[in-house]
Amino acid sequence: MKILVAYDGSHCANAALEELKRAGLDTTAEVLVMTLADVFVPQPIDDEVENTLPYVPEGIKRAHERAQHKLAQAEALAKRASEQIKSAFPDWHVRHEAQADSPAWALIRTADHWKPDLIVMGAQGHSVFGGRLILGSISQRVLYEARCSVRIARTSQKEADKPIRLLIAVDNSSDSSAAVDAVCRRHWPKGSEAGLLAVVDTVLAITPNSSEPSATKWIEVADEENWDQVRQIFEPSAEKLRHAGLHTEVLIRRGNPADQILEEANTWGADCIFVGAKGTRGIDRLLLGSVSSAVSARAHCSVEVVRPSNRTA
Image (cartoon, rainbow, N blue to C red):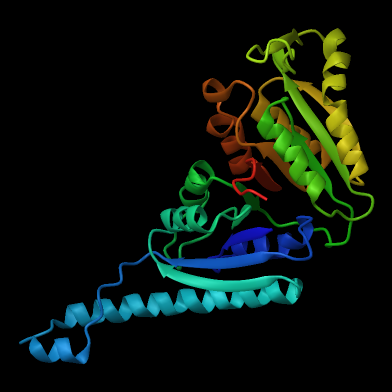
């Protein structure tokens, strides 16, 4: 598994490092820790160039010094974070990198090139002392633009080896199925639980008829007497999770999806919410445009927005 960890030295970023222990991740992984200094680093002025110039303004020299100092700070932060991760996961291959660049775009560009399976970020923080709210800018942009899964990590009060409660939002879409598969591939402490949460409105997509591959079938779910049929739709996913060692039940709620997911997570005491990047109605109902972004911003626990793998095996 390839994991890109965005780190900025903030309290939330440190919490995200600690929370890795409760993410069910493999005992072996390739990890890149990135810290971004949101500064412009001018081209260096070497001695030969400086000697050919009649005069180098002190302001330019100070700009070079400040930028290099910020980059050095970023490098130190990235190194510290990589050492912390290596201490917690000795079998992981961990390296670190610092860049002077716009944080969101640098992370997206790196992810496009390196193709991680997962990006891990704190819920909020700063861009090397820049004072920016990450979820309001950087994390939100990465959530929208990244081509892989993104985990917004928040502090947990539980110990790493204690049972974990996972709430998985499902709607019978390929992306929600990917969220179930992502949970099944992880390694969870004994006694951990999963809740498959389906939030219904008036209709729900079911598996298309094999004789009509282009047709999507829908069932009426406005009335509770039809909810047993909904449970049956998600029972195969629940069974997969049980085979993965998780005590699993199918939960059905009615209402606004984001509100219901957040309410259930709070009531049920979820440690993490898994949600697909988009839902059954494709571009007309982008989950990330409404549900996933709302859940990521407002949840009190960690949230993982899952996209199908962008790498071939």
